[in-house]
Image 1 (cartoon, rainbow, N blue to C red):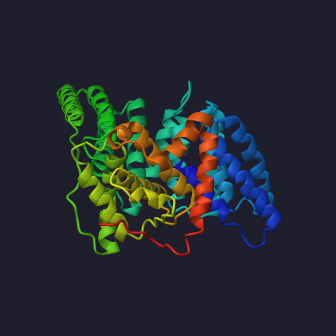
Image 2: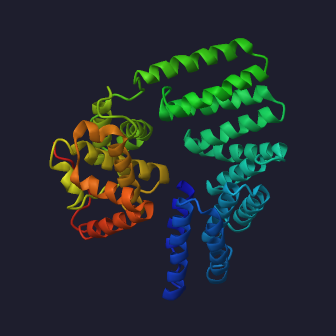
Image 3: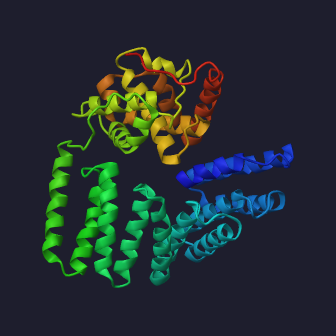
Length: 398
């Protein structure tokens, strides 16, 4: 979804030289692609992407970043359809396109290299040696940015996997440990992400003849899973944020609290701590702009619905951080509301009682499915949009 959402943002930035009619045609295809991808109709999505690619090439040229993003999404669809050769070709075309027309020092390039590596490693006849080569190039380039973020962690974990497959478990251990350290920092050691990756470290230790470390890792997995079952979490201490600089220094901490809040019931031990952190961070940061219309403000009107107002803020923050997009949009609103509905239907409705505003969406989904829910969310976004000029950033009542 992240790459899909970035793809939307790129296509919306169409040059003035493109006619209104042509813009409308591209944007219409853009909307179709997103909906088809979300519905997992990858074959139809590919058909639309082929038409879109032709149109973008004609109107904007292959040098436009929209053409590059089109190739990346084609590769992803082909991968989902298990057309691994097609995915490799599209991913290679994307790499070649960026290298020919754009600055290879920008992050898009190493991420495209890593995608190519992933597709090369897939299928019944993987080319793991080439996958390792491209993943290592992606890593070398990404390390220049001097950031320990999620994308770097993923590249490191891929290099570890391909190193192990190609007979170098020692390197696999080295890269896996680096990736795990970043996951621990981002998600916490009691997270599914961190615990899940420890299983790979266990295998790499065994492959490298380090049986005692493999056993220690297995014991650690068991310990963390038991603690996770007891609702232990690695949440940061609450901070009274006063500047955007402070917020930027604690994005990873905010993200931990966001993920925790949206994935736990209200009676979990650290929900109050997570909620407080999310709200204080969101009120000061410049990395997300949350808007609340009259309809959404209903969630703030009672004690039983207030947790869902916090979930709405958390959902907007999650979208902004994951997509590096602070501006409020239809995509942010829909993503946040789906987070709220999952939070509500995940058992919290039994703790708070029914909330009429949310039940409208739940009933639509149960009766008519996801397409009907998305259409209803679109209508509510239009309503909210009318309040945008009046509301820049709404604070929660204390």
